[in-house]
Image 1 (cartoon, rainbow, N blue to C red):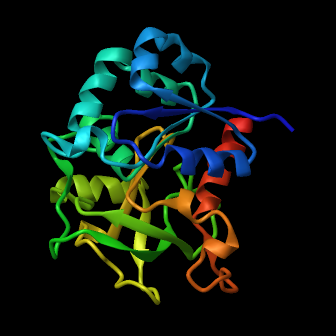
Image 2 (cartoon, rainbow, N blue to C red):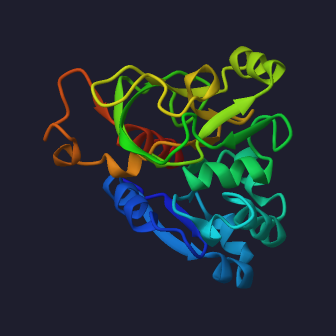
Length: 248
C-alpha cells in the first residue's frame, strides 16, 4: 500500500504539528513537517506533496488577528500554490488556526470579505469534546464519512460568520462540510457559528477548513468515555478519508 506524502506546514506558534503527524502516519501517510522558513528556501516541495495540512496552534501569537501573519507569509512564499494544488486534486486541510489561515488566505468560501472566523459567542476559550455531523458529499475529506463524529475543540476565535448570500451559496453548493450536533459534552453550537457550521470546503472540494481537532481523536483511549461508543466514530475518520483520497 502506497504512503502518500503529507506536507505539514508550520509557523512560529504552531503546536499541533506532532499531533497531526501522528494521526497522518496512523492513517497510512508519510508526514513531513516543513516550517515556513524551510518552505521559503525550497518552495518547490509544495509541488511534490500529495496531501497538505496547516495545523492548529497560535501562529505568531495571534498577533494582528488569528492566522493573519501566517496567511500573509504563506502567500508571499507560494503565491497561489495552495489553490493550484487543490486544482490538481491534492487534498488540503486546515485545522483550527489552520482554518483561520486558509480563510485569511482567501482559498475558502467568501474569502476575508463575506466570511470570517470571529470570537466565540458567548466569549471565552472553549476546550471540550464535541459531536459533529459530516454533511458535504462534495468535500474529499467528508464524502462517505459516517457519523456522528467525536473530537475535541480548543479555540477562542472559531465562530464562523458570513452574510446570508454566502450562507445560501454554501448550502446550495454543498460546501458546508461539518456541523456541530447535540452531544453529551457540549451544546449543539458551542461557539455561536452561523448555521452550526464547524467546517467548510472550497469549490473544488479539496480544501477543508474546520475548527475541531480530529488529530486529537485518533485512538479509542483518547475518547473521554475511554472508548468510542457504539454507532459513533472518532474524528480521525476525516483524516483517514483524506489519506485514502490522496492514495487514489
